[in-house]
Length: 290
Image (tube, rainbow, N blue to C red; front, side, top):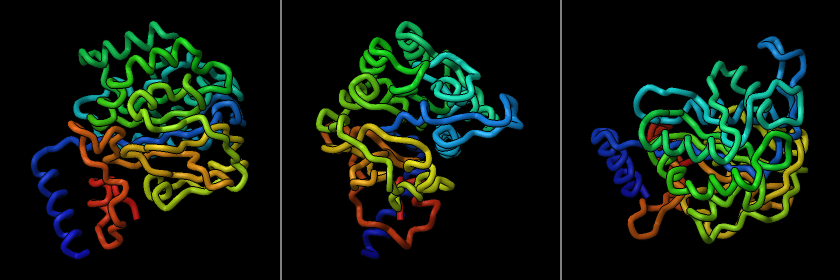
């Protein structure tokens, strides 16, 4: 075990010294907490996000703190599938609006399949350089429709490349509208299972990947869930179980890859024995969690 840790540490040091770009953090939930969130105290910074929107605020803050995109960011967050909104509840665009307000971050809103497709063309050409992609999910007002979901699926390779380049990814929802793009990258994953948020718990990996999140931020206190994940997770791991011990939130911290283990893909690391004695800096680099 000690020799394995030494080899892993040496590989991390080599990767850092070689200027290797780390993949970004990923958090994919089978939730519609966009719908089950509210804003109290008004639309200014003096207000407060509650329930599902508080989860979005905390999770987005964690994702942005560990994204590693090179160059100057043109936007902190790109909201895919929502127009801007200041509604006080039940609206996906408002959920990310107020999360960004609390975090002091900028948002580019892309509503409609045409806008989504154009964004990925602009991303490829370097016109835009965001820190993270946020997928508005399903189940709320002002979120993904079937055409927008199809546009995301058509751009699955670009989404994967964005994450591999250090960009953060966060998504909500269920079914092919929300996760057709994920199934295109991982054909063996099943993203249509049931879900029970009562008794949902963060795993050790979830706690390490997203400091500051607690069980109350993702369980029935925040709102219900409708989807769980099973099958081939690729480079992703379980961040939270629902009350029935199904994988309700999957992903990982900095260094997380989605496609892995196949020819031409990076190796999967989420099944490596837990390196409890590694310093936190190495854990962040390798994407391994204690």
